[in-house]
Length: 447
Length: 148
Image 1 (cartoon, helix red, strand yellow):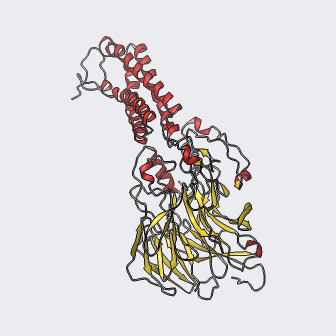
Image 2 (cartoon, one colour; image 1 turned 180 degrees about the horizontal axis):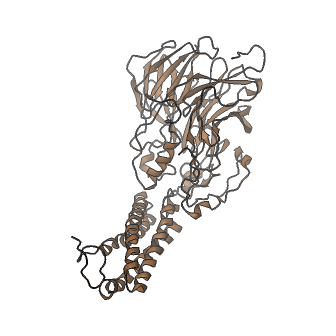
Image 3 (cartoon, helix red, strand yellow; image 1 turned 30 degrees about the vertical axis):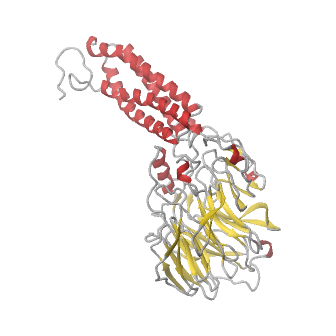
């Protein structure tokens, strides 16, 4: 049973019918992606890959001149990473416990498929306790950590974290909790204090809550994904969801900042600006080449379409009642990443150890597709920025997560550490990877 | 309390006065007709609850209909006068196959799960199932009494 599950539902001859969405694979990147007509197949394409983990010595692939090595291994579902200025790296290990309530016969089937793509029993690293933050100390910045400790545990499916004004803010799936914290600390013993509840509840479909602080430290921004693919759980399940919310860190007062974002993650302010950026997972089951996931700057008060329309004013035929009033003001996002790549991590290059062309560009962690037989994503891509705007096609940067139809790892959160190295949280590989540049003299080199 | 049939006419499988097949047959007929009604309720209201009901009714009808159909094959082999029973069986099988496809259509996330193809298949399958039940009325006496 180690074969991948491509077209697991190919029970019916009609399942083999073409998608009717043949497009040039390079045409769904950038500001003006090609959007084929929606094609709802009789049986949605499914491409889910068995997880095998990394054998000793195996690593993902990086471009020439770069080196990749694990900064921490044997983690338990690491989903996000926050490097601190003193060389400590906070790794968020997270697992959402409990399945969603079954609403329709398709739900248990989908849950089973999805769980296969996250299974870690075969990776050789028995995961035990998750839902904690592990601290890795690399004081001299050589990529070889001197210490490791559990900073705080007993969390509830945490994802986003931020350090602000001697507090560590943790976006659990159901609340933002803060702990007194000063960099250098390796263990937090003080109890957390809840700042504000976040939408969770028994369904909690998209459960990752991304978190960042505004550059002036006056506001927190937290992303809340939708509770469904295209509102099939009903409108009541979507209260305060598919949105980025703005939170006052002193009072916990919360209000929507932008809405209609199906599953936003990777909240990051563009360096030296007041512009918030996010990567968004768009909807499934409209065909293998629809709808492109995207990266976009976020306009305050902006509405980005979900569930009523996608990529601007393209109406989703599944959603009733329709809302032409909302569709009319749906904002077209800035930059398409192609369909179903599952972008979950975003960071901008602010270091100075990579070649200059990387300065100000974006790294995007693409967890990888399930709703197409030909996989998309499963890599970290780099996107050039010119004048604080994305330009050109994404370039593969960290690849090799998928090999011979098996997932050795799946990238999620990305960040730049104080040495300018790229950190990648790999939840299936249970590893935190560090990518450094060694193409020129003077750069830190390993082995 | 199933007793072995005494020598005489072939009876339907099951206890002497309560044969099994007529007990299973209403499940697909009612579920498939019910799914048509809940489809119409969904179209009228756009309330996802009705689409959920349709999906479950289709699943229940497929399970009950699958059990009934398996038994019907056995009865078909045993029956002396097969032509009327065969008509009934083919209609029921057609309804079942249509609803297999309809279940996949109904798994879509919203309006297109019903409009237009889901509704069309629901109408077709409900009609086939009802006619299959109607044919059963003439097939049953022949199988149960005349046959043999």
